[in-house]
Length: 351
Ligand code: NAP
Ligand code: ZN
Ligand code: ZN
Image (cartoon, rainbow, N blue to C red; front, side, top):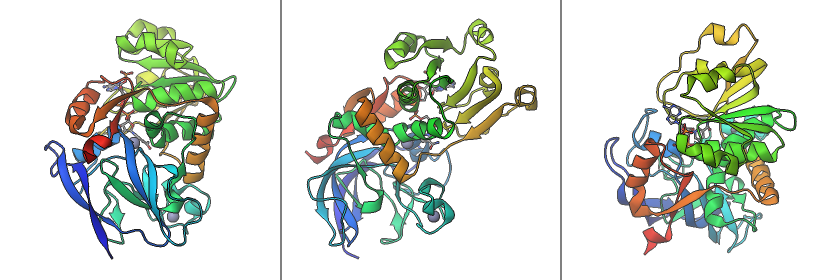
């Protein structure tokens, strides 16, 4: 298979900083499109993976799964896109397409394992997949999304992971008018959860550890705020919420958040801390509460989410950085110091 080399940023060991590397991409085959990457969001999963916190990271690792860019080349069998189209790529670049989940449009749950945008396995080149911290990417057209034209492109990039990861469970659990929703952890995912739940018509409560985010919560669309490290506030809000979306990236006491649910309430975790979170049986039993998880969203649902954001004029609140600033950005994210998503301007890697 023919390949070409592109500039990228990645890491060669869990404790190493990210630096510039050269990686190989496959040349466009019949069903592929080649995308010139314009912007790439920085997800906390990029940090977990670069640092091998979930184990199994193959090095070198090039993160990045919130990609937007412009199509520069298409294969001879491509029907959905043309050269010049603005498009997005999220957390997956392929799946088996044959299993029950794939047939139902739930490729994120592919029974053979979907192919992740980075740290997956690219069969064509028999190497790990490399993500969006790079100049260009080649992706089969079925895993490429249309980006609404009315939205700011850089601020749209985070929708490809943070957007769909919060949209999908909100839809699955039928959040809407009459639902009281809590969103825990107001980072990249959490702030999108607030905006999306509000646009779906829910009453939205921000649950944060950061004093500095209280003011912002209302601007993001929240109806109320709970400072989770204030015991009094937590106690006053016991048994008040129907649904909680937990977007926290680090260890936290899940039982404290479960106490905020009403009878038959549901807490869905999308945050993926490195270590297990102990759940007390008596956090669930007395009021028939449920604790569940959710993974990104399928390709069709990702397109629905982008269209929904286009209609409602929803994008991410971003801080635009240069590729060379990525190590600083990781350090700030680990301190919860980002409002609310870093997005890399890929022109900085190309110049
Ligand atoms: P992020 O921007 O770094 O935000 C994480 C937020 O968690 C922080 O802003 C902070 O919010 C809160 N937090 C951090 N440490 C905490 C602690 N010790 N206790 C309580 N709250 C704490 O991260 P992100 O990119 O949104 O990602 C969040 C998590 O979701 C990561 O683990 C990521 O890997 C995972 N993820 C999962 C999926 C999926 O499909 N399930 C997809 C994408 C990402 P406050 O300041 O408001 O407290
Ligand atoms: Zn992500
Ligand atoms: Zn499958």
